[in-house]
Amino acid sequence: MAEVVVDPEMPPDDAQLLRESSRVLIKMRQGWAPEPKRAMSGTHYRMMAVFGTVMFFGVLAGIGLVGRGLGLMLVLLGIPLMIALFVRTDWPEDEEVEHEREVYEQLRSYEGRYVLVEDLDESSARLLARAQRAIATVTDSRVNAEGLLDDVRNAVMLPAQEWEIARLLAKLSALRAKHRETVSKGVTPEVEAVAAPLARALDSSEEAVLARVEALERYASNVADAERAYLAQHQIEELRGRVHQYEELVAETGADGFAVPELERLAQDADRLEQALRRSVHSAHEAFRSLEP
Figure (cartoon, rainbow, N blue to C red):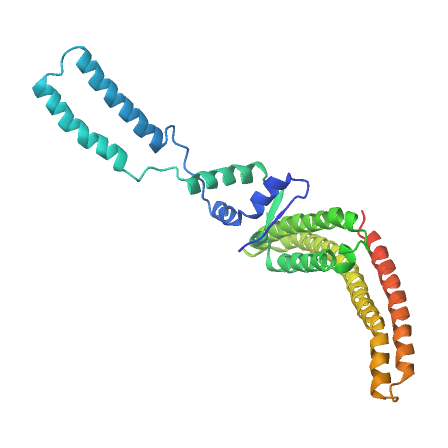
């Protein structure tokens, strides 16, 4: 299913609705719009028809026009009418139609504050995917969850970075498509003199977005280093916590060949990993600062 990137400043409930509504958005891109809402739903129509029929019989009875013969005829005509009103099941405005209309209105009201990934050209879609992978590397890491990074600022800065990258790529894709359509018709030397600098402007804009993406990837790379050091440190600590059990087993079995240097190396490895973790976290913080505007 297609993906929607939304402005992080959007109200959370509306943002969630948009993220879940890519199917409706694709239909809109293809020219779809919901039919105008009917003034009266099927249920209301049936209620009014029943009420009108009862009132009709009541008025006739009140003025004494319902005799035996006329009354019987009206009853014979009224029963099929009542059955038809209640049995019909083809009334419009079901829940799905109403939901799609609500989504349609939301999408229209937030035009410009969301990006449908399907609208991006191939190059732009690849760049956005790279940015999203880098962001996921950070947000899904244990070091972020444990607060070794600035998790609060990550929660604000990274969605803002994703949105800004998606927004710029959407504008780039749209303008690049129009540019290609224009020059594909063939250009004279005079037009080429104008089109060539504009094409370079598009390339320069893509390079600027690429620089943003690469900054995110550097940050993610540092976080990945810290993650590896963090996990390795915890594994080493678990092994160190069981050293006495190994020593007991060696003593009981008489396996005197168990090398003490291995135990010493275990402690040294733990110290090195702790230092590596600190360096990695420090590098991640430095890389994070490069993302700030």
